[in-house]
Amino acid sequence: MSGAGVVVSSARPPEGRAVARAWRTTLRVLPLHLLAVLLVAGCGGSPAPSGQPAPADATPPVAATPAATPGVPSEMTGIDLLFLSMMAGHTEQTLEIVRLVRDRLTDDELRTLVAAVEATETDELATARGWLAQAGRSARADDHAGHGTGPAQLARLRDAPDTEVDEVLIEVLSAHQQAAADLARAHQAAGTDARVLDLARRVEQSRSAQVALMAGRPG
Image (cartoon, rainbow, N blue to C red; front, top):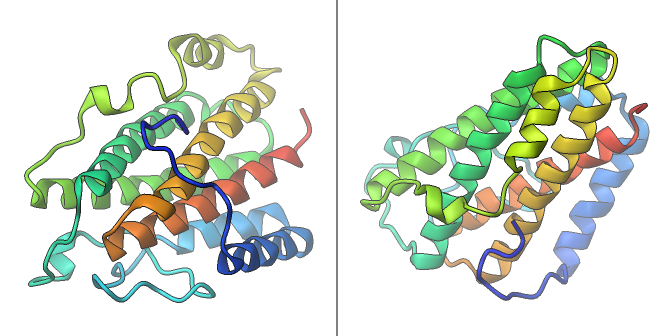
């Protein structure tokens, strides 16, 4: 996923380092199920208007469609649209992953996290598709080809014995979400539209938090 065809610096600005430090502090003091609830809570409301990105210490929601901001001029360039298209394809696959195993997981906290991922990314997918539609573009399969979880990994999930499904999910989903975080981080250095940049920032934060949470699970 990080090979999205755009070469950008992955170095984080001071603001990004502050956000990362804040998330690491949160991870140390909150139990997993509360963090999962926080991830779900980020789904409601409206995205930041173009030209007015949300402050770094806020966690604005991502669920609202572009209809919630009528009259906002589009500043999306080709790189913004490519990011949205790739993220839409990646998110569709995330939903496929969690739906393959959500009813088979044995770890209650892992099930809570998976439910949060499904709720959050369902809303993010609607947002990305809506912005793409406004720009006259739909998510294209070729934009995401070669960057997601492969058929072999999906087959591992599908065929995993009940005693191993938690462990396999952690392995597959961690790699998948890390790829999303890497793509979102890269776009923050390359994108131009404030709404898309804000979405990329929140995608990086949430996926990085999910990867950290899964790293602490048994398996």
